[in-house]
Amino acid sequence: ESSQYLAGRMHAAITDTKSHPIVELGAGFGSVTQLLPDNAVSLELEDERIAYLRETFPARTILDECAIEYISALSEPTIVVSCIPSVNNPEFRRLRAAVAQSRQRGMIAELITYTYFPTNNPFSGIFSLEERAGLEIRNVPPAFVWRYKC
Image (cartoon, rainbow, N blue to C red):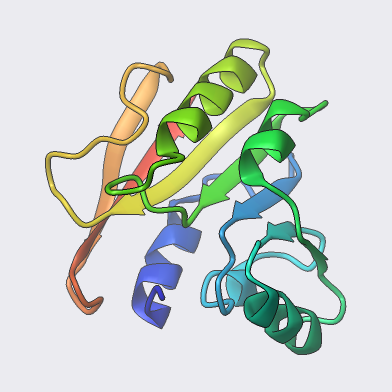
């Protein structure tokens, strides 16, 4: 799980929380969820985590839905906050392809994610702006926050 410190860095990396809807991928136990606006949508697949999220954030829309399918079906420009691992994840290639296709359709206004490896740029080459937006050393392990924009 992401620490409260990493969650804070990820939230701070979002440049505009008011102009576009926000979707969180891989909400886990809600360290990032708690910092996002109540109208954000959070996706999670594990039953125990979904139950916890729904109990802890009753005003939030919590969906038991695949991130790949959700991203592929976006119908308006959206800010995506991804807590889905990009290394050692057999589905990440499919997620990356879905992000690239949605970006080409203009449906991803901004994407925020993190990685534990300084040279791993998970969505390299998809967005016109890609930057390492921060380093959180109070997370175990330390994490690099990435911001992508059109």
